[in-house]
Amino acid sequence: MALRKKQEGKLVIEQTRDLEVVRAMLSAAGMSTHGLEWPPACYLVAYFGTEAVGVIGVEPSLDAALIRSLYVVEAMRRRGIGAELVAAARKAAHTRGARSLYLFSTDAGGFFKRLKFVEVPTAQLLSALGAVPMVKYYQSRPDDLAREAAWYFDISQDGVIVR
Image (cartoon, rainbow, N blue to C red; front, side, top):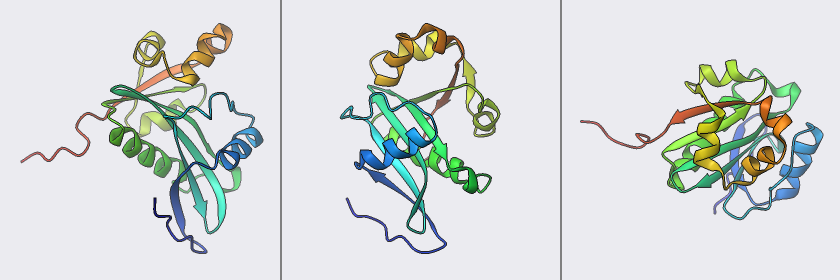
């Protein structure tokens, strides 16, 4: 994989296998690091210059994928970095064969709604992605699962040229 050159004042999003960077960002945000080592998972880190300012994960399973752990550092919010990370995760999921993209959210529903995600019953997400680590994590914690909302986006037409 070719790494993009990080430049001062520029935003670059890169796929990474450096799980320590991912773990450090998620831990600092108080987010779960459960299942980070799962081999099919993909993590993307946003850099502003050389500083890591955001992270997102994708856990694929057959024709669906879960976006997990979207985080942008407080000082860098409201600059479109979260939307850029979601767009990169969408591409990563699509290249891994996903036709459906899901996520859990407790308080960012408005953000995902602006990105055209629709809220769906949690059971739909669980049925589509029961084998991925983050879903297993929530299934083992019913009280935490009950606080989550499930969101869905159809990416089956991504990359299709309509004439």
